Image (cartoon, rainbow, N blue to C red; front, side, top):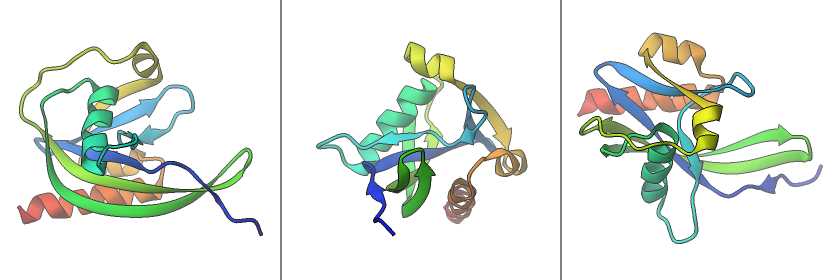
Length: 142
């Protein structure tokens, strides 16, 4: 069997506020996801996570908390098996200032603040449910 193709590493955040979690709803394919995206050259995972969460949600006053670690995932795309490293952080809002999202992100992703149980139910991928549970445990430990 061929080795999986490696995709660029990604980083994101579990944005928690007042007992709720912010999820993205992909209008194109129906997926419910945590905000994340590719780590650009020269960025640390934390810098990328803060940038990506800001880009995808519009929230500009983010505070990063616990590092939830890096997970290696494999999944199938049309052209075969791929592997990607994902790093997540717990995040909270220091304020509610927002900036406009890109037209692409605004059209593609709806934003929903959900209670924890509903978020766990809606998340499309098990790895993101595991990340959310880790974020909740880390948040409780603070």
